[in-house]
Image 1 (cartoon, rainbow, N blue to C red):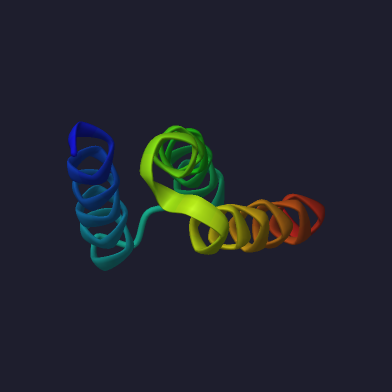
Image 2: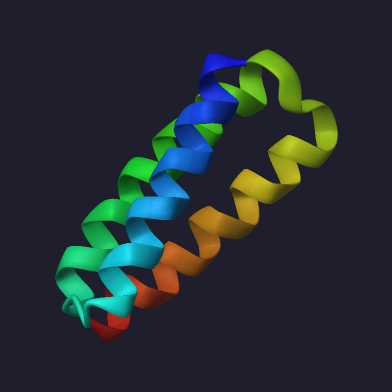
Amino acid sequence: MEEARGIVDQLDRIESMRRANAGPAELLAELRVLLHEAEAWSKDEGGEAGERAVARLRAALARDMIEV
């Protein structure tokens, strides 16, 4: 449950930063934190759906790193 709360908190931080027009590098750093939190959650509670969600997030971050 703690991992899920961390994910929600991180999503809130990212959304606040986005609304404040944070730069791509700042947002990408926060997304990396989100990825680590999602991986922890997936290992503890996420099952196959959680693993797929983490894989999609990892792929999205890889694409974004190319653009930054």
